[in-house]
Amino acid sequence: MSSNLLYTWKQKTEELETSTVSSDEKAELLALRKEVKQPRVEKKI
Image (tube, rainbow, N blue to C red):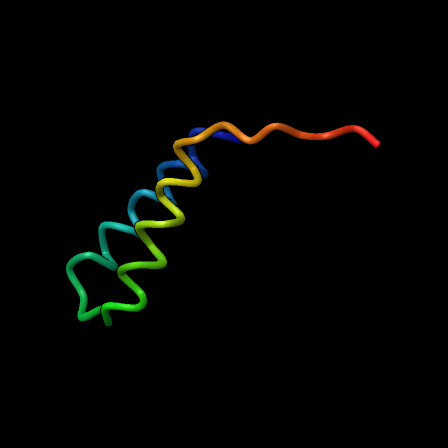
């Protein structure tokens, strides 16, 4: 994951915070942020 991608993602989330967002959208955003903070473990098949 490149730093530019992270910067873009962060900028878009900050824009979302300043716009009118429904409670469902806020809940989804918080869940996604929590998921991003936790490292994913990839399984090899």
